[in-house]
Image (cartoon, rainbow, N blue to C red; front, side, top):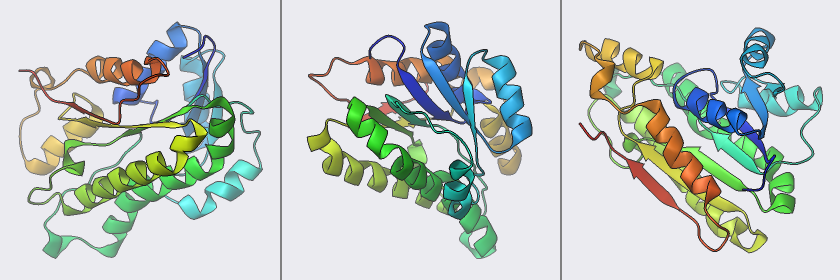
Length: 232
């Protein structure tokens, strides 16, 4: 990536997203941080001086276009990093349409809508789209159906986008982290009824290193799929 590249990042408030944003901010790249509301945007702007913010609720992708029409979008986008996500575990027999819609909206439809908005800029810059997926995007287990379905769909979105945009020079990477020490993981353990010990799981900084490796790779190569598993 060239110096002062501009990256649009979702999920920069915590976990992997925060780690990636810190690393890119520290090296001087321009950041456009997505936030669900104005309060969150103000918080992110305070944590990352000089970063711009973009407000829109990923849980309501139908309204993202309207929300963005009232804000100034970046003219240049070198990286679109989809890192935000939500998870709610339950057996299929207990999952309501509301729970399904929430996970599909945030984890799949919103990334597709954001990608649609920024594809013109990404084509001009021959930029990079990174989808932070999950091990659940490769295999589904009991009580993970809605989340895994959203992440399997995210893999399909990335694979299709890669084929469609290859001729335009846009690179597309899916990253499949295993369990990572983050607020989301704490919630998963709570839902599973298990004690949460962050030291057992991947440090978000390690996943950030993998993501930066993908976006910094020279133009003669492209990392399509990157699986990151706990080493302990």
